[in-house]
Length: 593
Image 1 (tube, one colour):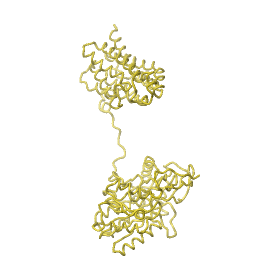
Image 2: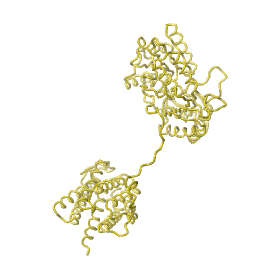
Image 3: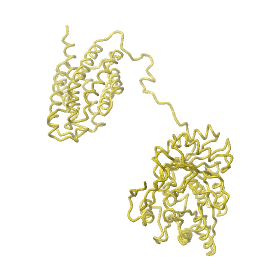
Image 4: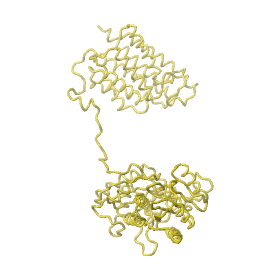
């Protein structure tokens, strides 16, 4: 069933001229000739035919293949692009206007895709320009490898490999060499490249209905860039299989379309046809390179991946393979200001992957492996009871936290916290409890392993910041002041990366007042256990105060104030609970005989 497709356009008849207007507004190095709608020519803003003393490189054809051809106008590539209507060759007068606008004494090279309309219109324009005294050479590009060798006069279709010819010719012309020499390089490049496309859908012309030629689960091999039928319709296969088929077709010794044999150096272009995501194009490139290397014995010197010559909104890709040598690579690597030529592709590849770096503590500290000490010192005993009490307190709150979170969040806060607490209790038998900093680091590792979502990463950040602060201490024993500084650093890190602060209705509303009271009481001379207890009471009060706050972070920020007033923030309650349980455990440990 055919249906009208959705398009972000105005009048379907104006899509090409409005595209040109937007392109030129976007890129200050481009201009267009004031001859709409008949003359649609994009040209370099820095080139004037009467004074230009290099060979002008001109291409074009029907529109609908954007960014080709106008997106490749720029120093080092095309001097001008002649735009026809969608899938229609530009008229002779438009081509002539482009030639006259940019061609100087050195002449111009016309690069033409092998379609009958383009050959005829560009050919007549070339003859007319010659009669006016211009030097003109023409190179026809037919890089299609999908169909059997033609017996008639039509020949192979011009496809995305034409973009590589544009680049080589433009780079050659930029050096100032003669028209004849530029034409020789472009013609040689056109003979070195082969292309084949695969479509998952047909394209929709502006203002028209979408054809229904390809059914669900089908793909078309060798579909043309104007939607013309390809070589075959087949069941959709994994991209591995599709890539293998396309490469074999392009490199087939039977058709001998390209002079590429085992041991050759090549460049690869994976071209999106208009509706294929960058992810899928990169997957295609990632599979094509090793197949070219291992199955076909080729050295892949460059890889170009992106949408270069599309077919409106067609889903699919084409693969182009060009035989390369140092001269071709030099032209491809030459600088250009053409806006749609890919940057960052030139140069030889370093190894694709390198080892994952290990944290310094794991790569350099090999004299004492982490693990539970054979005998705990006083600090180790205190840490053990505090961690166990805190984890148990969180586990006991699971159902209550879930109930609150179901009203203000996604209902899983208690379950998420429970998993973290359970992992801590399970892993604690291997914690290096005599080393406070490393123990906090291991707590973070336990949490990260099992706790998902925002709460998991925030708790891990909390532990990492505390670890870094404790490690920075030069004292052999961690003091109460060190713990207070670690808590302050953790709060700062959670605020920095999570974006919340006091009053945002988060766990920080429990921890910030706790930190303030802890430092205040320690500075006043209170013993550490008492200061810890008093600060835990501030944490509980802070968590309870979240009932009166309007959420400004997390899912709660989408909940009405009336609902929020009925429950405290679950994360704040969880933080206050483990903090208070740890404080009581430490106090009891200090008071034990």
